[in-house]
Length: 478
Image (tube, rainbow, N blue to C red; front, side, top):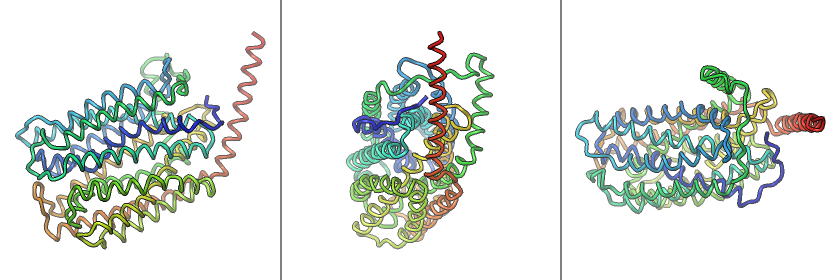
């Protein structure tokens, strides 16, 4: 039972967020470089690369609610989340190295199977970290404003990992041509650095929250066998997905994730083919400033949520990001760096940080679920949340591979035609922006306002006080 309402020390909140350094750096490389790496260096076709990535991410999504369900029920002296995070960090580091050090392969089929298998290993081990870590963030405090700060530190950790990834890629892959050998490419050197960051950041995060991760509560279906556990798992996930408060938030976030996946997958292709910038210019000249603009803007979104509640700022953040994306990217001038720095890194970085409010709302909805069900299930809700994230990424990756084929994108060619470059700009701008605007509209259906959440928490506190009083009376009689 979570009864933490006092303010946590800043070092705990900051330390909690450090686990995202390793996870985010790995995820950024996967999103912005993996498709390019396997098409240009390994020689796998864009369509087959998209299929492999989509299948692996879909598998990853299936494992997310399983992981949330299991971590909710884990009972160990280290807590219910920490053992999974520790095991996942070691596994992710090993799987990530395997992904970027592929053996020599001749056929498209061999390359497809290797990418599929190694990426599934990466996805599975990342789930062991990400779902328990997100659920732990919702359990560190019940205070709704402090939760915004906790998830703000988590987002700051994501940006730190983003910065680490783009700097490593910019340094190690600068100047590589498409004919570079996969096993000796700079991406392999970047993978070594990120593998170290995964283990180190997870260890620091676990050290910072030591003693705050409590063991899971024993539930009625435990001890009744495997079938009872499976039925309880299916029933719990069905309840979460059908939760009338959670469903609109989940749908909105899933739609936005499709857009984010297409955006991340096409970023290097858009900037190099349409704006005629080099990879080092993109990685170090655009993406690094993006992090530098986005990181301090987290404070602005936390303050806006404190003043207006989470729903209104989250809606306007998503809607304005969509409008900005539709209009801006097809119109940016080619050959100059200042324009994408101002618009992509500056305005885009500010608006995209509103995503912390969506994550923080999941913890609030877990409170609503606890009031209805009497069960404490943050892991379940964050598991379903990441399932939607991964399923949307799978859809976005499959769509990206197909769209690249449809617009005539050529693998292994250093310069695309002007027509292909223009079509890339349309995908990167209006198509992605439409996803963000659709997500904002769907999000309006989410009924949990700040006032309603305060009422939920008041009712929860009354219930918990009664339970504590009952437990005290029972122990006194004994």
